[in-house]
Length: 429
Image: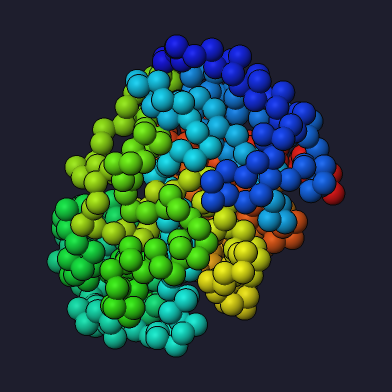
């Protein structure tokens, strides 16, 4: 197990805890590009209960279960809690910072969905447009007769074409980027362009007819290519101009530049044997290099302050600090469940921790809070990432929470779920 050396982290984080309890002026300063800081009690939170949540997070770091993390809570547009702890790189003894940069993986999906909805608002495409209108190679899609069979040669014609809405809902019939079908057909390589990846996806038969099943898939990455075609811009340029720029998400991108590399949180793997941490092998094209493949489903890096701003814009009905990225009606449509009971994404197993959720456009939506295993509210929306990032926003209470760490498996120790439950328990109004 790694031990944190060189800095007395117990002492440092004890000081952080005292700072949280006293709410001295330095804590109330806004981080770069962040939301303003507010007093917990003024925003309906108990400082003492938030301190317990802080202690829980800190214990996981001090015990060596995770290298470090950043967690933030905002309500009504003000930050209630924002703390960093541990290391963003154990080996180099780089301390975790409030604006440390993380690979957010599938937390990229809501960002791409927002970009698509902007173009729909502008009338440049419609939810019911067939994907083949923009990418003709999807026009004659075939469907596997039995996607679980050893013989992948037996296919049939699709009953209908997939639509833009199918891509947003994971009902297009596509597979996950690491699914067996795509691995066998060498569909995904970070060395490919987005255009080439999407053409490879189109060449593989579908798992099922569009609209007939919910399958967590590569569909949002395909949507990113359509955004390029419709907007006439590279996907990263579009996001910079229409999402990141207006919302001042200054550290959100598809890679970490050399100037920011010291703030990059290193990813670690938890050993199933002794729970020790080891460095997660880097990708063939490292996250510090501008990649040819711009993956809207899983390729974005960001920070807790940036993502809190993104969620706050959605909670505000599509606007933040005078900059509107979506109309309120569009946000309401995005963050509403669109999956029928028969296709509910997370099944009926009572032990499933996400049994309370349906699916909106690019994100999960709570539809039955009574089925929650750790505290949710109907209408809450958000998503997580495969390296331990987690986010949610609650329109009822006006609260958003983001926690970022870099560890596989992502659910090790259920840190995010514990933090979420303790945040709700900290609300006194």
